[in-house]
Structure formats: C-alpha cells, structure tokens
Length: 212
Image 1 (cartoon, rainbow, N blue to C red):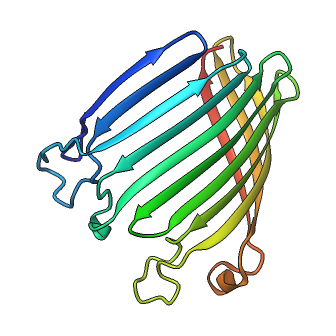
Image 2 (cartoon, one colour):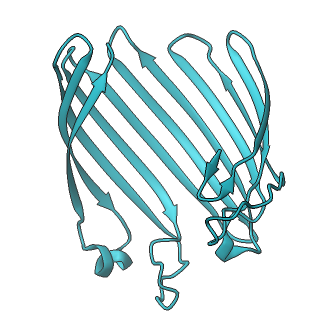
C-alpha cells in the first residue's frame, strides 16, 4: 500500500494445516524518512517467521521472531531482533477468554527490552462484560528530551487495569456498548517527579458495532 509516500512491500509465504500454520516474510525494516511525499526504494533487508498451534478449538499457542535492519532513523546504527510468544484461550460457551503474552526487543548493539501481558474478558451475560489486564514493560523511551538525565535510561513499569462494559442492542444488527475502566501503575521511585507518586487513570468509552 501507499502511506505518506512510503511503499510498504512485504513478501510472505506460508503453510497451513488443520491445527497449525507457519509463515515467513521479507520486508523493508527502515521507517520512512521525513520526506513524506516521495516514493522510497523498497529494500527487502528484514525478515520474520511465525508459527501457531491450536491443539483444541479453545487454545492457540504462537511464537514469532523477526530481524529489522536499522528500523529507527534516529538510531541508524542499530538493528533490532524482536521475539514474541503467547497462549490464548477462548471458551465461547462459557463467555471467558484470556491471553498471556511475552515479547522481547533486542537492539544490536544495545539492551534487550522485555514485556509481559496478561488479560482476561468474562461475558457475565449477553449484555455484561468484565475485563482485566496487567502489563509489565521495560522501557527506555519515557523521556524524549536528550538533555534529561533519564533519557535512554530503562525503567520497568507495571500497569493494572480493570473495567466493565454494558452492551445495549439497538436492533438485530446494531449495538452500542458503554463502559469504563480504572488503571493503577507500579513504578520505580525515580519516576515520581515526572509521573507522580501513585498515578491512577480512568477511562470511559462508547462503542458502536454492526453485526450480530
């Protein structure tokens, strides 16, 4: 496709069986430059592989690994290797779904940033949903100012979130969902000056959907 003057060229090949599939891709690793209206030359210098396995209809296990050739313009000397793994469960009859995921981003040269994610959604009834999520991330991009003493310093931060959504059928095909969530954060004391001692956030939302 064509987006902001950048041609995204991806070549993918794969094989799918009833319970598993594997695929690989080659693509351009570098992000587009600041000249958004020109057409950049595609370079198939990066690659990724993915595999998934579904032992039963309710379970899916996946893993992926990719190499990106100098993806960041501001860090042109660094390549990246990214790895992900996840386990997903969905019991459509009982209304429960959950996922546990892990990711690692290794800069070469540079550190490895890891992250964990766990989330669950429970359809208590045809109209009521409860959801919860926990994220634990090691991040070195919390301070963008190059003059800040914490610039490029990695911190591990945890986010805990829980919420509720109410589905309101408007007709057989149109639905409205109203809900909200509350999130709390656990972080190192060194971040207190920038983010507060005990940061808490709240979100309200409305979602309109079409279909059964």
